[in-house]
Image (cartoon, rainbow over all chains, first blue to last red; front, side, top):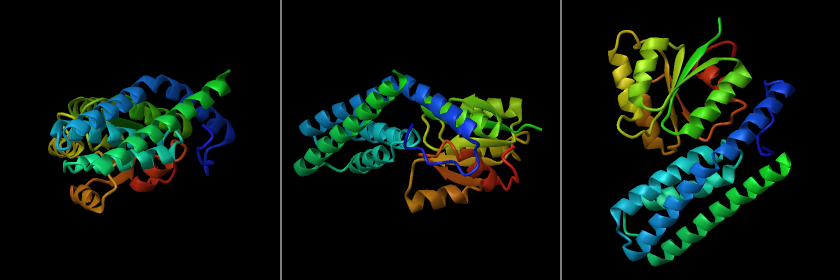
Length: 127
Length: 127
């Protein structure tokens, strides 16, 4: 949990304990986070076929919204920013242009890489 | 006396992180609910000192849950803080007009969440 800002009130032992608990919770949240990334990829594939697919827009925006809410809390503020970008692209429901679909794919890829890097880092710390 | 906080959020990882944060950093007692309906039941039974209420939930969203809590005499006076990943000003104004005690944003910093709650509610100390 290297990205958590230093506390202005919590004593050091409390900070350390919270870091450990959050690291453990991050490991347990991997499946949920991975499922949300899968929803984004599925929505993206559907939008390639039909850029106006309302169900894909809704499912993608919802998954991106949830990722935006949790990633920063786990110390990935840039993950929150990327997820918000995806949410904004999908939530309007307007047909997505081919150029924007490419951007969407790159953003989802970046998001996945960032999450995998954090998980690898967390694994090394535990080892 | 130890403060008791009810967290209502459909996302398990958010409930867990917020709960760990408030218990570990502030030493508060935390009660969890995974839906607006369950939250209303827990609020009536547990009589928390405050409620952290997610905005976007399926079936019954945060604003609707808040209005139900307000209508029930046994929960009407419990201060409610909305928790949202929505960053647009129009959403924030709409939430503020409901009459909630405050709005906190996801992602939150687990180390300072209890301080933010205390400041929002005008509590002098986190304990």
